Image (cartoon, rainbow, N blue to C red; front, side):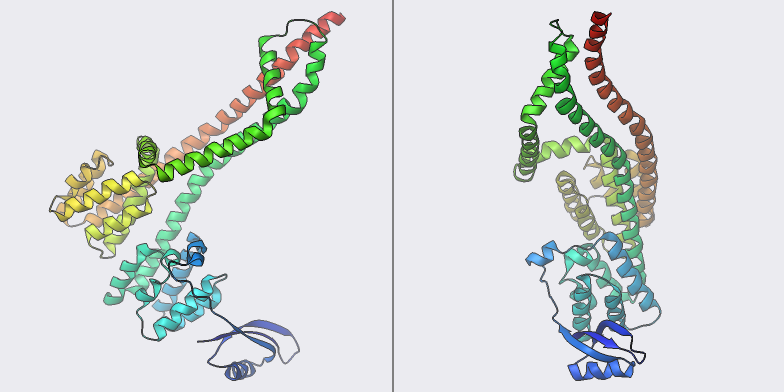
Length: 400
């Protein structure tokens, strides 16, 4: 249904603006008048439909918070027995940005008889391809709002874990950036000014002073080239990672050997797996959907092989064990869950356990990184200061 943007005045002469949905312009004017508004300007909004493969679909992004908020609002309205089409219309007008256009397009498709899950498939990058099968099953069982509440909760938990990881890295990164700035300033501006004084002594300079003078001269002459070199190396490594499979495998294999990195991947995978199993997704399909949320190609490859072995009849604990990704506790847990018919509960229990373990490790890392980064910065600055002060002590001795 067409949407019109209006500028109008109420009976008290106050200016109002907003949007109204109507089949035609004259009906839109009538709707506004019934609300006590007298339109000065009424403009039809052309809907922007983005196909799943279009340039704009690839660039359009919905944050985890927006997605969580969207599904929570829809679930709340559906739980209150509001029809889906009306719920989509209400939520569309509450949302900001380009997502409003997508919701209105989905509403129109649902109003024309298209299933909600099928309408969402037009925008998998926006609404998350992970949830499409779950929503499709929920439509059949009549538990659509329950699944939406679960999706909203999952998105909030995922956002919380991501924020914790960012917070853990933020302070050390800030200290490192500050250190690089301070050291660069000392080497480029302070040390060269002191160099003339040092040379006037006509004495052999200490080794640390020679090192700092050389570093300062290099930074002064080649600072821009150094920045370009670092950026070029980063770009080349990025291209090599994306294009050269052996190089990417070596990097990802190294990362998987890092305990906390592997545990973060397993936590993300297991939480999504439990989420899908509880929603009624078959195990093999759930595994194939779940490993896609993990940004590691070797993890993808090994879990894809595990899914294929499960299809051939291998036990779930054996298939997971052969990936060499999971520890003995996880394997024992899913083995017990599979035998008892409560696999989703046991996988969810392990996801919660791992998440708590990660939180403890992140707190320990942050509490250790803060003083360590300050000590490192102090040591570097102290080294530079000492290299300057030692020759100055010699000047003081000569004056005496």
